[in-house]
Length: 206
Image (cartoon, rainbow, N blue to C red):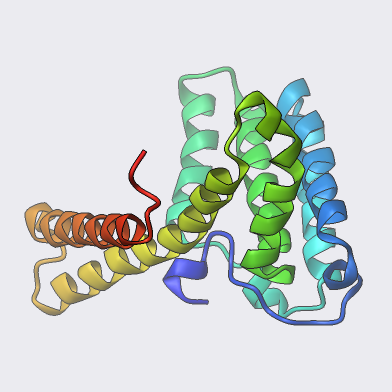
């Protein structure tokens, strides 16, 4: 899995039952699976969420090593959540609840993005929010913002990984200045190019 795909993944065609579900049903599965655990904040619901999300990912019939793999950053974050609450917080069960909720949300989101093309995801959100236009909600701009997010996050993750690889090749992987400066410059340049492209299409005037 590429570094930029380690969190949510990129669409992979298939004929599994999850692939064939309508996009609305996939969004409903995402919300129905995550909201109870996030609202109730119980460790056993978090564990149930993780189990459910793993079952959904396995049902995609995509390579298991690909679908269940977690990047180093995510593993560190999950371990930190558990360790912090064991040492300084409310105990092990709270750490399990928080890390389980996070992992379950990531896995279910990954199942959504792995089995649905990004344009379909965006169009579904635009159509769902279109009734709000009479209240002044800009559904098309909302869809554009989501599309930009889906495009930008993988690019920025890949950018930071490229900078880290380049710094390591020069023996500067422990030099924070050498790591942060090129990444920030690249991110700003990307944002500038995106803004110029939107302005050229008349989308950045308001």
